[in-house]
Image 1 (tube, rainbow, N blue to C red):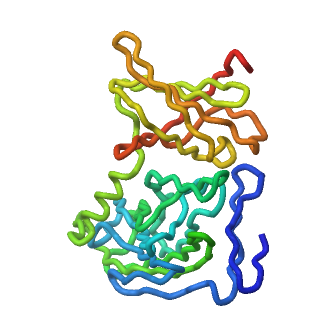
Image 2: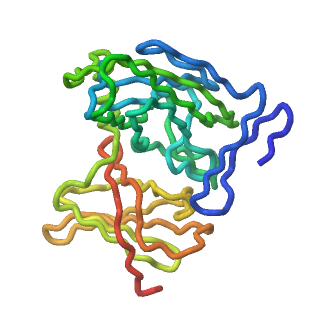
Image 3: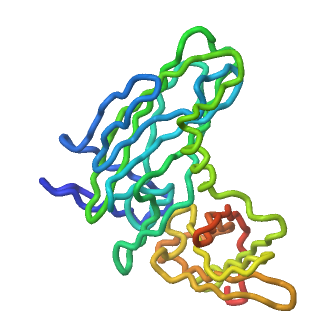
Length: 299
């Protein structure tokens, strides 16, 4: 979508599924500020800041540690989940790492549902969020000199309108041969972020998905009564994000569980074989879902 002079329009996804397109940043919108030092302050992005932080005080050769991209946003503004929903784009990161260090994939906390109109629902984060990043150190990493870790972060920050931004963040950490010690100032931030990550469902829960003509019916057999739940699809253009997700409680004999009806997206262009995403319970945990899809009687 072309930006008109003096105006930033909401980024809308094209109808092609699973295709992310990050807009070219216009002059005067892109912000690039370097933050050096062992634990640098947040770097400005539109209506917020982003900071590169480390869970431990140093890096140890041959061991894995965890970094985090800490976004803090002004009230009312948000950024996006890995699947942004009906509009927007998730943050993009390009790492600048010395030899011997490798960054893993971003780890995404369960998102929030944000309805911007009757037909548009987005998935993302308000206020603040920490995206965790595994950092692997080679056993051959030299242990005498500190290492400088850098990242270019591209982000779309939205409220009624969307503003793209870019920030360069850096962090310098010592390298020591003994096991890394946690940074006390970062312990709560990282612990809270891990609690918000979706995890495996409780032992004994069983998932199945039946495909109808216009819906996917997600069935979950549980050990407890569940009356509210919401499913966030991992991939774009699979379900109608704005459609109600009707939950029917199942309680037959000693069994407990529920069925969640998910309306198919009009942009779904090929048959799915698996349903992948996050099942979130209100004010509670969230669980990873990766279930084969069985054709129903109406297919």
